[in-house]
Amino acid sequence: MANKVEICGVDTAKLPRYKDKEMYEMLLAIKAGDKQVRDEFIRGNLRLVLSVIQKFSGRGENPDDLFQVGCVGLIKALNNFDMSHGVKFSTYAVPMIVGELRRYLRDNNSIRVSRSLRDMAYKALTAKEMLGKTLQREPTVEEVAKELDVKKEDVVLALDSIQDPISLFEPVFNDDGDSIYVMDQIKDMKNTDAGWIENLSISEAMKKLTEREQHILNMRFFQGKTQMEVAEEISISQAQVSRLEKNALNYMKKYV
Image (cartoon, rainbow, N blue to C red; front, side):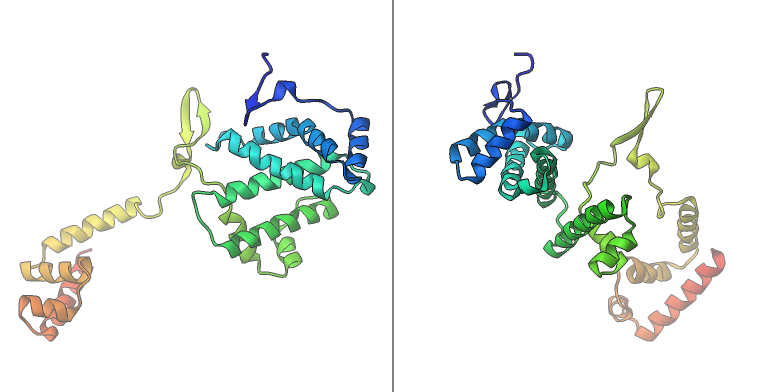
């Protein structure tokens, strides 16, 4: 009972276990059209599905949903399995189950990407796996792009689009009880010390302008109004607005 796991109403402790010879004989019967043996074979391989979905735990997905998707992958593997290759069924089935789970997770990702981009990503992953078997090493992005006859940038963009999002508060390292989070490793390129000093200088320079010049620059660069709109609002000509704006900006440049 200690090893009992119930998922989708299935008590895994009661699932049958078959040896390789038994599974081979069952596969022969399945290929001959025996539906009862087919059902028994699928039931006997549900532990395989369970072991695979455990690798996808911690993603906030319902285990029952993952198990059902994994079962779809198992059935697809059985439908496409070719006994003439001399490969164990589990060796063939695991990548099929993993692929089905990955497709499910990508299609249900909180970050939505276009269908064409996802299709490109799937093709890139397939090409990457095939090249890895041929080259006996991890293929480069250039090699994958050449295989697909597309630009390297397109492959990178496609693969990046299907990455699982992570929280900025995800711990990546612990040092004597103090956690280092993803957010701590991201550099802020906008709110830098130089930018803060520059903003402070601009703010001080604005204070040196006349009230009218401050009002014009505020409407032009903070409210996004055109010179014509500013002219109508303060009842002067557009030429005057242009002159006042230019003089104010020149003064601020010298001050900063």
